[in-house]
Amino acid sequence: MTQIVQKTRCEEAVLLDCIGDGVVTIGLDMRIRYMNRAMRELLGYEQEELLGQPLSCHFLVQGSICSTQDCILERAIRNREKVRNYETVIQNKEGRKIPVSLNTDLLWDETGNLIGIVETYRDLSQINELKAKLEHQGNTKTRGPLVARSKALQSILDLLPQVANSKTTVLIEGESGTGKELIAREIHRLSPRRDQPFVAINCAALAEGVLESELFGHVKGAFTGAIADRPGRFELAHRGTIFLDEIADITPMAQAKLLRVLQEGEFERVGGNKTVKVDVRVVAATNKILTTVVEEGGFRDDLYYRLQVFPITVPPLRDRKEDLLPLIEHSIVRLSRAMGKNVRDIDGPALRLLEAHRYPGNVRELENILEHAFIRCPDHTIRPEHLPEYLLPDRPHPLKSPRAQETKGITLALMEQEAIVQALEQTDWNYRQACRILGVSRSTLLRRIKTYNLNRKSKSI
Image (cartoon, rainbow, N blue to C red; front, side, top):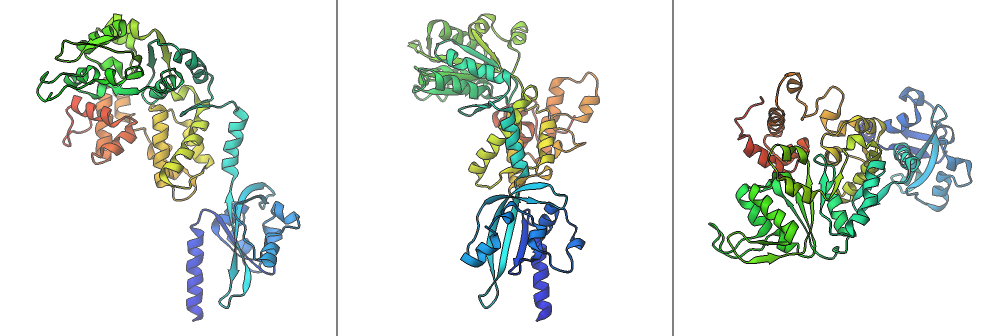
């Protein structure tokens, strides 16, 4: 029987050593009976130092509460009281003060007699450090879903109320994942049109023969499958705002119709001859340098000048690293709520890896990284091992193939094709996971697969 009890206690100790929080059991004589690995590491003690004679809890765990008349153990004995989420400070072996969140429960023997308490300690150092950094940098602006501390982005946000109160066409330029649609939605939210529709369309996600019908609608019989009249996005956005994402990819015919809408506020449905008049605020966006597309003949110059009445250029995340910490904090809160997890902290090494990364996929990539970490995080703290592998030292980013970097004269298209093939092979052609790795939307990935004629037989270049 004694061997069975000893084996059970050994198994319990192994399990407790797997817990991320510190665990301590204290007897009624105020001596520590057990301390798990996390607590030993928190206090800086080796297991050998704790063997033998039980140590006084006042000596080993020197908390700020111990210097008062409110001793946790005495409260437990006197009132049979449990403590929940009590924030205090303990002192480690070297004398360093550590902020912790303390929880306690009562320990009973087999006959129902109180024999002590169990205490769990959660280290608050990292989250307090993160909060301190945020408070030190200060003046974080949160407007709707937009989070900004950098002067570059704050200056853009400061202009939005003035822009929103006009009907002026806005062209938002910036790399993929920088938050162009969020800015468009903020313009609509601040405008007198806020109670009217906001209609968004990704122009690059639709085939050439479909885009014009999607934008302007069609009449019955206009083409095969047109079995009834159908309004387009411009009609649906009447008196509101339409957001045309990836505007550089629209067809020449659609460009001509869009120019007429901007000039006259009218158009005809595909296959129809009845003029439709609309009152729509147009906000367009592109991740390309539109002037270059114009120079190359892929975009009408007269339409370009109509669109860029008020241009906004969103800087990439790598050029506004001041926004990184508030974005991380904002995403942690959002993901905790959305995924129903109790992840609250990110430890120092993981935070340093995030701060060192260049973010070719910008804010969208950061959000995907944190979502990946949430999935892998088993407790309340994100650590380096929970992050995607390419963030770890000596691991290449999936969009930065070493072979592509070493090859002289390789085209951007070939580099993109190789990155897509590698991501698809890595995920066994799971589009959702491949999109997370690449930092692109599903529609963009499918369009690129079609453009490069990729299939499961395709190999890295």
